[in-house]
Length: 534
View 1: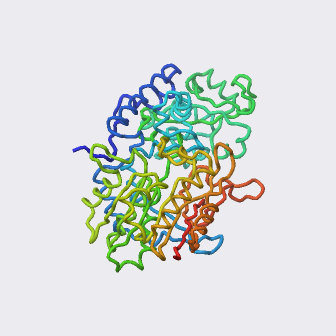
View 2 (view 1 turned 90 degrees about the vertical axis):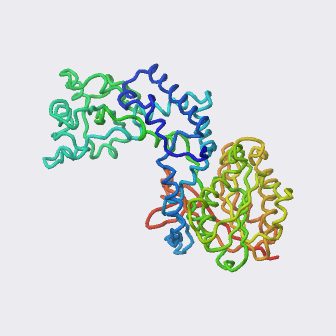
View 3 (view 1 turned 60 degrees about the horizontal axis):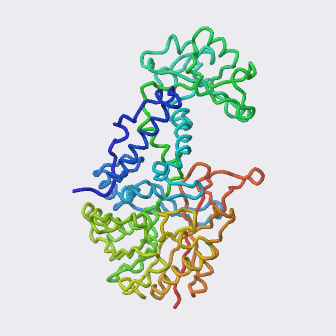
C-alpha cells in the first residue's frame, strides 16, 4: 500500500547526480550546467513520482512513529519563559524538534512562496524561467562552497608545536601559511592523502575582523609557490577577488592576502549539500510549533476537561502543526478538532481524504492513548466557510478558536483562486473581505465565554514596501465584534540567518517584535487572546 508521507530515501545520495565536491569545484561552466540539468531532472522525477522534495530529511517510518510516541508523553512545562526585557512570563518557546516530523505528511509545504524571496523550492526546480537563479545558487554553494560545507580554513593554531594532527581540522604542522602549503604538499599524513586545497582572496572590508585566526598567504608568496609547482592553476580556480576594486590577481598588490581552504577529494555533494536547499536556496516555510500548540490547547481547555466534548476550531489549518498538538492533548480530555484549509495540495485524491485526516489516522494507529482526538475537516475559503451547511452545526458550540491565518501576501501558499491574497490583492480588500469575515465567523460560532487565540503579525508588503498593520486591524475588528481583549502571549520564533541584526546607532533589533531570553535577543509573533462576552 502506498504511503502519503515522505521519508529519507537516499534517492539523491545514491544517484549518478551525486558527484564529489572536487568534481563540482573543478568542472568547467558547460560541464557544470549539464550537471545542473541532471539534478533538476532527478528532483522533478522524485517530486512527481514519489511526492518527494529534494530535502528528504533523515526520518524513516519507524522514526516517525517514535517521534509521535515521544511527543505524546512529552511535558511542555518548559515552553513558557520569561522575557528578560519586561520580566513577564509570557514567552512561548519551542525547545525541541519533537513532532516536527509532521512536516513529512505535507510535502507541498515546499510549494509555498515567501514573497520576500519571490519563489518556492518547487518553482526553483520546475520553472525554467528561474534557471539562472538556480544556477547562481548552485555555483555559490557547490562550486565555491559559499556555506563552508565541504572545506575548512587552515588556522594559525595549526602552527603550534602542540597542534594535534589527529584532529581533522589540523592536518599539518607549519610555521606560517607559506610553510603550510609546502608541508601539505610533501608531508601530510596518509589519512589526509585524498585532501586538496584552494585559495580565497581576502577583501578590504573583512581584513581586520575576518583574517584573525586564519592562516594567510601574500600574493608574493603565492607567485613563488607557483614557480616551484606547489600551487597549481586549480588551487586558484575559485579565488574571490577584491570585492571593492574587482582587481584580477595580476593587478593586486604584492602584500594582498589570501586564505587557504582545504577539502577531501572523496566527499560527495550529498547528503551534506542538502542543507542548502532549506537555508541557501529559498526561505524555508515554517510550520507552527506542535509543542507550543500543545501548551496552548492544554492551558485554555483545562477548565473544560470534565465536559462531554471540547470543540476547538482552526479555520486556517496550515501544515498540521496545531493539529499535532491537539492529537496529544486529547489523551486526557474529550477534544474535537474542527479544521479548515482550502489548499488543494493538502487533499489526497487517491484516498479521498485530506492530509489532516491521514496524519490523524496515522497517529491513532501508532500511538496508544487513553482517548484519541475526534475531528472533522473542511476545504473551504475561511471567509466563506459559514455558508457550508455541514459546518453550520457548530454554531455556538465552539469552545476555543486557535489559528494562524495568512499574513496577507507575505507567503503565497498555492497561488490559485482560493489563496486569500490572490482573491484580494489589495490589502484593504483582504482586510475587509478575508480577515474581517473570517473573524466574524469565528466570533459568531464561539460559545459565550469562549476563547479566541489569533497568531498574527505586522508584515512588510513587498509590492508597496509599506508596513501592513495586521495586529492593530485584528484587534480593532475583534473589539468591534464585542470581543474582550484578554492578553498577548509572545510566540518566539526559531533563530534564523539575519534574525539578530541590530541598528548601527540604537544597537536595537531591526525587527519590530523582539524579546530577550537568556541574554539572546529573539523575534516573536503576537498571540492575541480574546474572550467572547455575549
